[in-house]
View 1 (tube, rainbow, N blue to C red):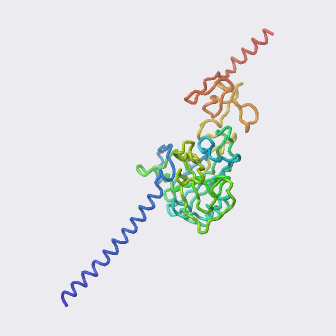
View 2: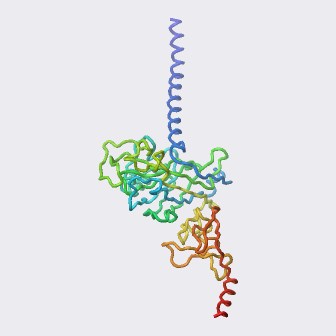
Length: 363
């Protein structure tokens, strides 16, 4: 009996420890899986990360926001197979959330809202999911979809609404549907806006994202007829070995290049009250994150230096900037050098006036 009692006491002591160990292993395994899922090299490529001095706890005292631009990298040169004549991006969407909100993940089935965004390009179903997510999502924004200008990729971008983040909702996710397509899209998820080492918010973020298959349609070409999969498959990133009919594969067959670029810049309000970044989106529509200052044109009659630039189809009339190349334009005379600066002549108002008087006197 004494031995039995000792054995029983030992068993009672060991059982909780064993179960605690099993629980710890399960939890640890889940954490490992989650961490594996959000490894950047599997989901997106970091191109730029710039620190700020805005500490993570300050987001409770100062409204903290990100303003982002989505740019096209999906073109015939890098993704030649069956590239569509009328290639288009759906409205890009972006949101901040906790780590627990994951409407799509690699190797998991997607939500119905993401399915509709990938298949049809419409975001309304996903927006209703965002509203239903309650306290898991803090802020949501979207941009305007666009047809891809295959002659001038500098025109292919969209501004997104500013989204708010804080220490409880630091994770940013975004996506855009590829049109036409059966169920393909690009995007990223759970990008931590806080530097884990010094606990400050990133001042500037730029990433490249890849094409993904939502796993909800069996189509293998851009214009395949609707063929829903029941049950749906897991979401997977498109690589050369699983690319449907070779679509998205590079010309040499070695890789699948990124199809989208997302760039975000930090904006901190002076207090808890909400505030907006001034002139967002820029009134003249220029990509101000890529070309800072391009929203401030110059007048050659009063400003020096002031160059005349080659207008784009979206411009109304003449375009003048202190430096065309640094503002995303080409000068009317000369060209841009490798540093993005202009090698053309600059319009100086006084010299122009003298030249005009001289020409008049000679006539």
